[in-house]
Length: 150
Image 1: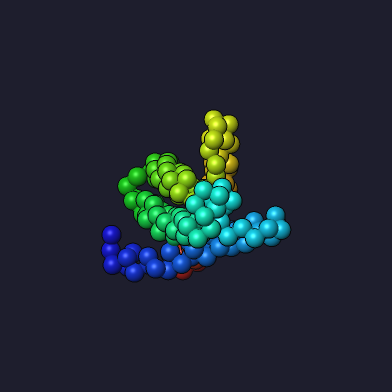
Image 2 (image 1 turned 90 degrees about the vertical axis):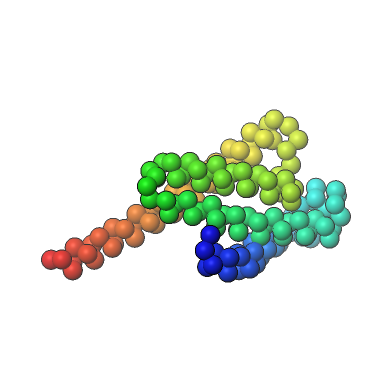
């Protein structure tokens, strides 16, 4: 881990806190009830602690997500291996944070399966977006190189 990575921690943490706040705001608007954190967390921990845990989990997700995505810089591994390791790391990180902040309530096997399926769907959509974006960037760079060489 280099110095640059450590300097990013405060920014990543603030992005995570901000994202958690925006998601909470979205749920508040959708339910027309002010929910600064998941209701199950508020019921179990009280408002202040639930909000702290919600924001802490968001910060951990952004910091951990940044470190996990560094796996894509290991060019000696295939894209399939890097993606599998990234998926596993992201999945573990998300489910730890989701339990910490009560983002999802896992009270039955159906809830576990539904949570995993939803996670896989969201992960796949985001991954495909990055994949096609990077592919388009590579194509554009290759075209520029071809133009320079011709």
